[in-house]
Image (cartoon, rainbow, N blue to C red):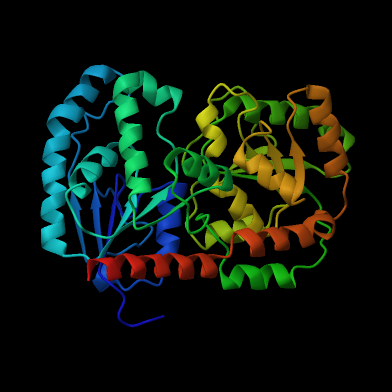
Length: 399
């Protein structure tokens, strides 16, 4: 890696050590970036540093907690955010540019970071790279902000993508959609990836014959309907298997109070830090990646859960459940990394689950495709190399 890396400013809503898949991707891509050349601007403050992401300096255009438009009085709070907070945050970001003097800006357009970044960069000649991780215009946020305000936010997000020096997005369907809408193409599909040690683990992985079947679920249960369908189907076939089955939930949230939770065969493992999380997942047999089975939220079809890639890194075949148009289902169909189900019919679910769980050694069946998918789509070293090349292109524009 070159020694003369440019001064990089990451600008987004979340702080350096935020939880969640999006921040984790950013940290993974920055693992080789020198701290002295790394700066950060965000709308949300740093709460803790458990992920140990260090930066040379961090500026926060803090949103008052009571003003953030989550649910109560969300339309009124959104008006204040747009007309009072956004102008102040725009000025705050411009001051950060003068203070940090970055060579390149990495824009990750999450919700309330979008308006101040778009306003400030329209009058700047700075080179910047944009990574779209999620679409903001979901039904939930449209309901909270109002359709007209959300339309303005979407236009600004599209501007940040189309007018970036270089750009990328989180899934192949999202890249195609953004190309159709903005006319701008992406340098690559940027998501979490497997490191050299992950590929070494997969290359050395051999057939196993565990005494039990452990199904890993990583992250929050955001699509509870699909999750519960899977749990119900699994509960119906457990007595037909020769080995006991457990669900291992790796999450910062607890689900013991939910009606589907059964402590006799479901275990909450907590939000484990690396490398404990990696080790614990490798002790499992399968991974589970659910998405919505309906089109009630069309924008979710473009998102891609990081858990899918963490399962690949752990060498786990994956149960993928979701609508056929979702990005994760398309990936699971392109590479036979496990069992892909697009039906909500309980009988079909039970049949496919039983057939899969009767496979004595899933790695022997699905291992070659897991490796092929990981190498072709989620090589972290290759993704970092391409991203850093984009940063250099942006820095050259400044000069």
